[in-house]
Length: 116
Image (tube, rainbow, N blue to C red; front, side, top):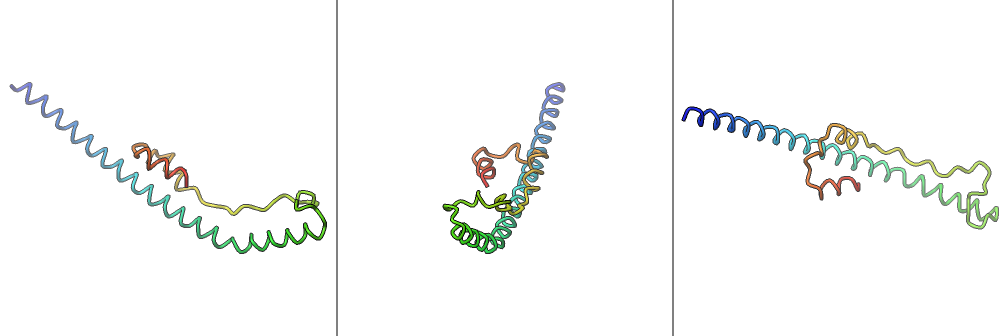
């Protein structure tokens, strides 16, 4: 009977430890998701703020291409290297991956996060 009581106590302690560990993992995942969400919102604001610049750049380029008769392609403009892309943040997502915060995330949720 004493051995059974000891086994039960050990199993109960392991169950509590698993519960605590799972709770900590879920909390870490929630914090990582909120960080990624803030990063996505910030990136959207950056893109929205840069849109007028890129629109004006595109319009100016179209006029230049038309005036020089380049058949709609800017590739023949000397020194043309394309548009510089806006710099977007990915630190929160990379940190979540590096710390394995998404390790226990539901697959469908993880797939949606990775598409953003």
